[in-house]
Every structure is written in structure tokens, then in C-alpha cells.
Length: 377
Figure 1 (cartoon, rainbow, N blue to C red):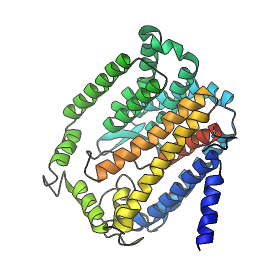
Figure 2 (cartoon, one colour):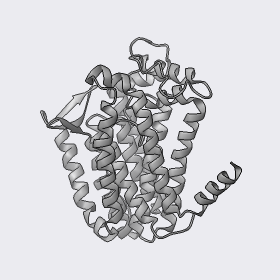
Figure 3 (cartoon, one colour):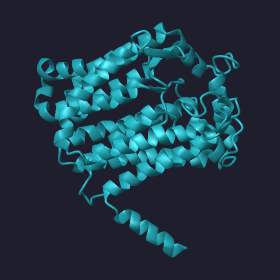
Figure 4 (cartoon, rainbow, N blue to C red):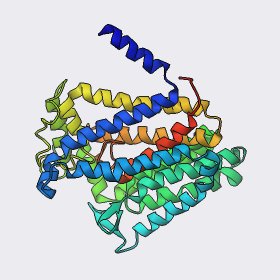
């Protein structure tokens, strides 16, 4: 057994950074499918008469299409991908605008975030995040020197890139507004923007976010719930309390895969935003920490890849992409754990939803291409 373990460790450490990154993504996707099959079984049976309905949908609409997106991003040369930066950005803007048109975007939970096409629906903001990264990374690769000048560089890219966070805020979607605005900040910081320009930008983000929470009663309620979980336990605080019950009942090692009791109607969104609570209940503290370590591994691998990537566009995109994954994971885990207000941010590669999985797989393909040919770790 020790010999086999040694051989496995030797194999991992002898792999190229590219292979390690692809393996990490593949493992977390498979883990997500396993947890989705477990968490959604009762919900699928009750709604569709098939305990594997959502699981199979995720495979067909998410994994297959996401795999195609990964392959295209991986094999298409970067010089060609860069040409699509502006078209993808404009398409993202168009979809977010269409979302606000009556009878085109449909409303759920007090927000207009989905576009229905026949029997299928998709979430434009998930694709817009990748479109934003494409555009800002491409601009910085060609105009890095201009970034030091406020009127000639910093303000123009801020204005163009800020269109997407602004449209997302109109849905309204305060959490994804914060995520997309933060991505712009991170990329500008990585490109060497002046600190005073960045401080001014961060103050604007904080002010807009604060005012949005104050003006949107449902968002303000989430903050109140965070500060006082016992407030209205059968109403506003219900999801948070049930999430905490699920995490607490899992203990150190969990109840076992498939043994969650909270997924039987008690906890809302068990296959979506709240799936981390089911992970904690079934796999315990240890399983939850292992998942968090996987997210940290993706971030660390991405930052290493950005250092060895020869193309500036690939460098900036990689930094933005792994930051996106880290931000979403942090917000989702923090919200379910009672450290942050509840949001609609999904757990990357895990939560049910084709839009998120497809966009993340496509982004992963570009990052894997950036690491191609390197044997550095």
C-alpha cells in the first residue's frame, strides 16, 4: 500500500502544471455531479417523477456543452480567441439588455436573471463574466502603458468594462455586481494601475453596493438575518437556519453520502445555492475542508500558470478567471456558513445550472491552453 501511495505521489508531482490543472477541474466536476445526484434526488422525484432528472440535465446541458466549450477554448489559438474579445463583450451586453425587456427575461425570486428559449433557460450574467474577462484582458494586453493615464487609459476601460456590472445591478443582482466589479479591480491592479485610481474605483463600488442594499428591501432583510438569525425563523431567517442545522448535524465526518435529512423539503435550493450545506451534512467538516482546498488549489495553479504564460492576454485572463472562481466559492461558502448575507451566487462547478458550468468549463479551457507546453509546477 505504501508503495502504491508513493507511486501515486510521484505521478502527481511529475505531471505538468497543465495536467494538474485539468485533473483538478475534472475531479471537482465529478464531485459536483456526485453531490448533485445526492442532494437533488428528492426534489427531482417530487417535481419530475424521476430522482435523477436534475442530475441527467446537468450532464446533458452542463457537462457535455461545457466539455465542448473547454475543447474549443483549448484548441483555438490565442491570436484567434483575442479577436472575439469585443464581439463576446458586446454579445454579453446585448443579452443583459434583453434580460430587462418584458416577456424576454423572466422573473424569479424578485429578480430578472433568466432568458427563456423554448423549454430551455439560461442566465446571461454567467456568460457575461467570461465576456468581461475576455474584453478587459485583451484591452490590457494591448494598452497596459495607457493605463497609467487616468483620462486616456484608466477611465475608458473602467467605463467600458463597467457596463456589465451596471446592467447586472439592474436585474437586480447585487452579489454578481460586486463580483464583476471586483474582477475589473483585480485585473487593473494586476496590470499595474495607479493605487489612487484604484482606491477611487473601490470607493465607488462600495458606495453603489451599500446604496443598493439600502434601496432593495429583500437585500436589507438578508443583512438583518445575518446579524440576527433568530429573527423570523420561519420566514426571513428560515434558509440560513436550515443551512446551519445541516452543517452542524454533519459533525466532523458527516452522516454519509446520500444520508442528508435536510434535503427532504426542509432546506430550499438544495441543488443550487445551498448545496454546500448538504455537502457539510453528508461529508462533514472534513469533506467541506477538502472541497475548499480544491478551490484554493485551482486558484494557486491559476496564479502559477499566469506567471509562465507567454501571452499577456492569457496571463490577465487566467488571473481574472481563477479570481472569479475563488470569489464565488468564498461568497457561497460564507453565506451558507452564516458569515455573509445569503446571495444567489452558486458554488462553482458544483451547483446545478448549465449556464455556470458551461462558462466555467470554457474559461478553464483557455487557462489550460495558457499552461500548455510547460513542465513547471
